[in-house]
Length: 141
Image (cartoon, one colour):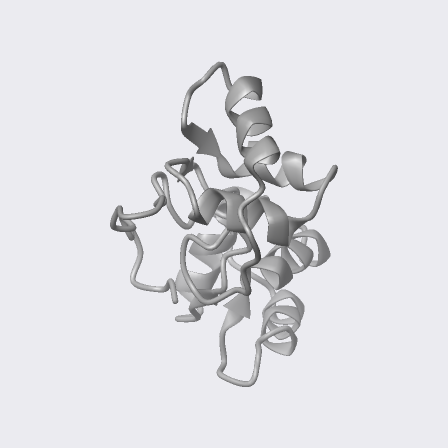
């Protein structure tokens, strides 16, 4: 992100922080639209304001509620991605449109699917069960 944020844009970011002073993943999506910043630049916005992005909707970082893994959804996700288990954040968000984010999150976290390319720019490679999250930024929580 090359341009500086205006005072109004910064105020919108701060108004969307949680009680702990963090910007949740879901709110980061909304703020990006409100301040007219590309999704992939939101990590830069957070870094520039020394704010942490928290609670990844897909469970890569933070703490989000889980339910049972959906085996049929798992098979659908893998089939839709040509049997590749490295699946982009965007593709998983698209899957959530036909089920729910909680079901997708739980299925991914309970499997060998590896989340890649965060839409907010938080990570290139996320994690799957038993793998460590490669955090490229200090401002993830």
